Length: 227
Image (cartoon, rainbow, N blue to C red; front, side):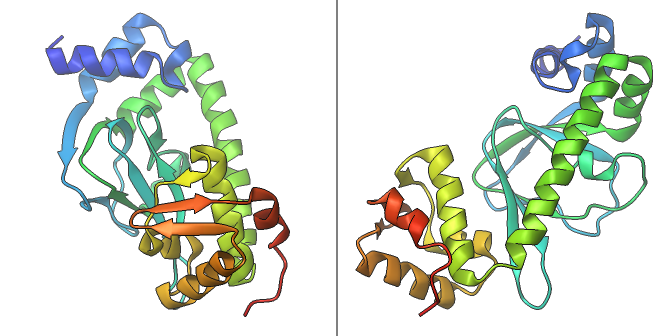
């Protein structure tokens, strides 16, 4: 195998659902895959595009965006190295992409052709079983996203901040513009919500950073009337 294929095979071997596949199956899958580089803010694919492959992140981060009606766009996920995207939501069908994937910074990702993935799933019970488990988890995430979209803007701001805090701690690497995308509301509305939380000394903001000062008060702020 080439240097790229060896690198891809090593990454696939430690990434679910491929961890249970044989060395020969991993090599065969890697031979069908290819490495791709994307500039910051480049779209890997757009909602409605014809889908023929899924992707595995080697380095960088990807934002997964979903159109939520009107002018609203929700950020469903923010993914990093070793995570798959553009794959599970389409299994068992030839449907187009149901979301948009955008490179957050410079991105390197492995393109995994649908045909190669499907062939491996048919050969390997371990891969097929793990794929089913991942799909079930994906369904739970989608249900949570739908429920999230029905919440008030205030509750969505708080919920998003709590989710980001669980991942990054009290110093969250996010701009107010990114937060507005994740919340699925206009920047002005989200800015007003952040201003209320700042006035209550629950958080403070700097360029590209949100600092949680009182997590307990932030949790209590969920369900409060919007101002």
